[in-house]
Amino acid sequence: MNNPFLLLSVLAPTGEMTNGAAGGRSWLREFARLLARDRGGVIGLTLFLLVIFSALFAPWLAPHDPLRQDLRASRMPPAWMEGGDWSHPLGTDTLGRDLFSRILYGSRVSLTVGFFGVLIAGAIGLTVGLFSGYVGGRVDAAIMTGVNIVLALPYLLFVVFIAGILGRSLFNVILIFGITDAPIFVRVVRGEVFRIRKSVYVEAAESVGVKQGRILYEHILPNLLGPFLTVATFEMSAMILYEAGLGFLGLSVPPDVPSWGNMLEAGRQHLQRFWWIATFPGLAIMITSLGMNLLGDWLRDALDPRLRRLHK
Image 1 (cartoon, helix red, strand yellow):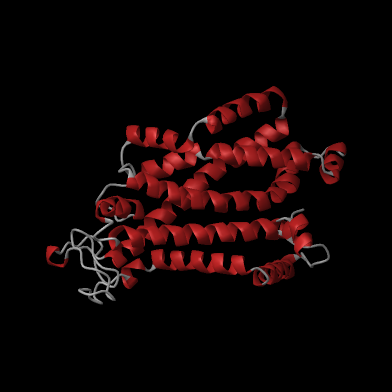
Image 2: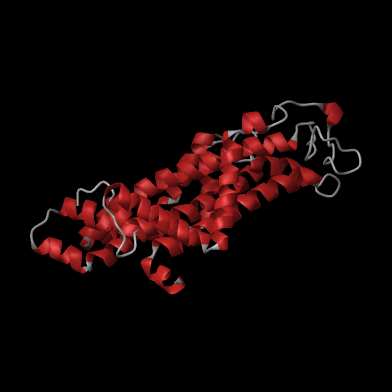
């Protein structure tokens, strides 16, 4: 069980080579084959990589400084419309700022919130869920009572309430989503731990006196990766949507930071005459969310051996 490709070999189909580099290549080939058979997965991965590319190379792709104001070019329509100019391909906002540049830089905010929010929520959920599911008893009952109370609250209202208290900043938004989203991971991980504990190989390890820490690390944790990664993908998509919602309400990052939510809020009063100010950031949110949901749907099928067999 000390194989460095242990985590990958758990996901590989029976009969594949899973030792050393051969196991890694075998796992990648299998995933590539599954991806090629799923159009939704290909589209989702393409859209997701496109957003990541835009975020990473925004300084080189953006034709203008996203904060630079030019009132002479205020409310300029997209380039293909009358009065537009290809120097501002998607037009400008009420302050003359280039929308295309702001959308590119806004992807950085959305991906940062989604990634680090899921990282915090996943770390908390994995730790607490493993402990709760493996220990069981009164400890599990107490933990799940708290989790169920949090999950019973209206999520968006709960987030808005906390954001209103803490104030507008990127760090606060990440922290809010990381903490409030952790109960979902706790419940998923705990349920999987209960299921895996009943497996023959776990019972066999316990019967021969294997230490609990080793059972958790070598037998239970690797088998949690599939459901965990799937939930993480969907929750990252949800966090991007919720961050945009907070920005629309004026509770996300400061107004001088280019984010899709802030752009929606700035353009909502001009939808009838200057529709492009809010429409293009909305499309960016939709495309990102669609890509991540399609990717998460494919991951759910690819990482679950039972679903893989159904699709063969």
